[in-house]
Image: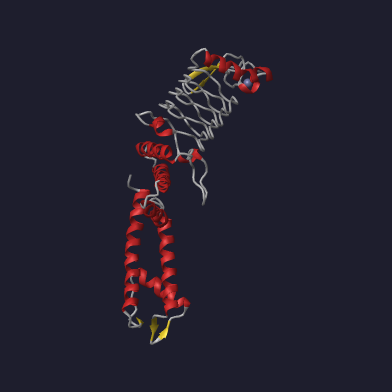
Length: 319
Ligand SMILES: [Zn+2]
């Protein structure tokens, strides 16, 4: 005998009447979403719209697995609702009440959660790529559950998970709220991601304002990824070594016994300088500009070392 109810997230839900199916019953139907008849399935949207228009609350509604892409839930009371495994691409939840609702495994790509109440809303393994959050959604102690940076899309070498960034000002506020959330959750990797995205949004705002601080922001992004990307410090150091090597070779200004260094030797000399070595047999030709050049490379080396330690610490330890 199959049981009458199934327990999902501490809630007993009647099971689908179809055969041995143990799926949860959808709304007031007798079966799960998969076993609804085609007519019933297509009627769900209309019935939902009617209910919303009449102001009926949808609290505790079970819609597990439903395809409700682009559906407009704005202002709806969906507290304690089960929306897990739903297709909700580009759905609108503006000002919706999603308190303690279950959105695990739901596909919310591009959904609009502006000012939605997300307290206790569960996002386990849902897809939140390009979602519109607005800072408000996560502020005022409205704490969602099981958020992680990778829910916002996959990060590759040239891409990062992201929310809707069409308005950098609101996206910045959302990322800041996310950062606060992740720090409170002690999720260092996700906090680092949110912090980095927040700075990227700041840079876009600075560009819009034609502010000079944009240049500083670009510089910080390149040399250390705003203190979140230690590899960028190493890449910067490598670029400095190469650039100075080329300059030494080009100016023919460093020599061993009056013979200027070749390409490889120049780069090696540059590498040694940035690392703080010195070679008594390699001498700069008597020219104060060249001495200044070598000294500045050594100084850059110290700065980059400091930056590297700072970035490593910030990224992996200090939050
Ligand atoms: Zn079923």
